[in-house]
Length: 383
Image 1 (tube, rainbow, N blue to C red):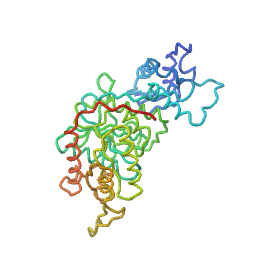
Image 2 (spheres, rainbow, N blue to C red):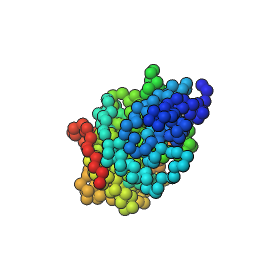
Image 3 (spheres, rainbow, N blue to C red):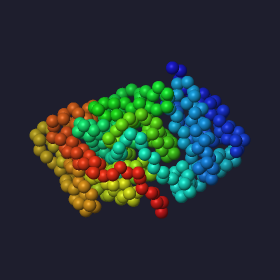
Image 4 (cartoon, helix red, strand yellow):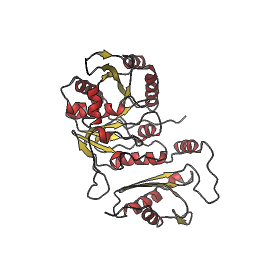
């Protein structure tokens, strides 16, 4: 298969006309952020804020034009009204323009507004989140997904961390996903009984994702909705750390059944976990509970237990905030080693105490999901 070039993509896009402006979107300078990753293409179409809500047909024409190129399996095309469509004399946008445009769109019902669309065939969507990085969230997400599958549920795992995807390595999956016969949807990769999708399957492991916010949101939408997930009891979403665009997008556009918050027991981590809980509560996403990861350190030589990051902080925080405490996961060499090797501890050592801890957490999560009605999604209020 011949390599897809930027020139070929731009040539295809030059056939897409913006009738209102009287030219094609390439010569009008509306195309930016073009990225070609193997058979996957992504780019922005920049328009003025007042036109953004009405240009979905233009976006779709551009997407179809790129998908018609031989060898292209997917196209991520995002309309962005961050600034006026560029002209040779257009000045740069003032500081804060991105934020103001997002707020305008949210208030006027433009592309950034919250409109939840259910994911057909998926009963429950669970976000695994943390207020900060480095607390082992991805490890918890992978083992939670495998544990839910071990309990007999049909499970998917979406790696929503576009900038730092970890799940391909943690789930021991290599290669690229294939497309459905009509080439309109990607078929998720699978291991340990879990269907998995990540931007990491579409790029080289050491390739940095130098995309701006709108491109990331567009890619996330595609990974959610342009994937043949099939019938799932649970879709576990490994969120990026923090409380930014991805978390807000998921809360606005997907009927989340709830969020699992991962934290270490130390005060500084719990401070950020508190912010994550507050954010999900603000957008009316239930908190399924807190997991205390790296709860204690178990020496691999002598078995001595040390409380490197303190202990019990997440339990106390759960009690203070009146949310469920799901359990403790120790800082143990086998968990780290199996994660690095692509063999989650629940799958590689199912009889271990560590696997039992994850399965117990999965059981608590599932009981809450089974007892709760399927969510159609809250209204989002921008203050």
